[in-house]
Image (cartoon, rainbow, N blue to C red; front, side, top):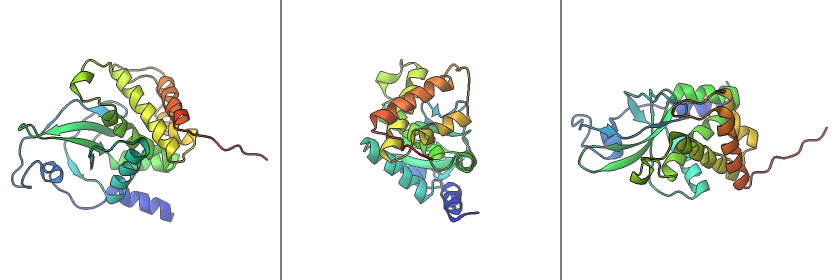
Length: 214
């Protein structure tokens, strides 16, 4: 395994676990275990389900921070690895009014994307989830926003971020193409629509593909 792959694996798998409450500052620790609630979930490819969480590795947190700086979004985000089907964004509340913006990714899913599509593929997924928060998809005003608009808006932000981080358009759309869906679902548009939204963000982010000769 190459050094870059080892580094990526360390990012995704990490070590050590903590309760969600203590990790985001919503409870005293493992013994307290307050009742937590996730609001509407926005998952990268649908079917958001999660039962276990652990802190994300430092590199995963750093990548989310890079994405936030690239798009100019400064609100605190808490990043976790867990058994989500792929990756998701949500708001966590303990019932007392304290809320935290969270992103959860499944390590195995992200590592598979990296092995098959390179570093831009999993980065796009993280950028998509950051996009949900940046677009205010969990706000009161967004409760009547069509799910497809939320997903396409997050895809646009992902393309914008990837362009500003120096990635090619193919890097920005690779994860979507790897999970290709000809038809949309109730919550997620078809892949061609999502790719176009991501490419629009990439173009608006100043993305330029280098021409190759020979």
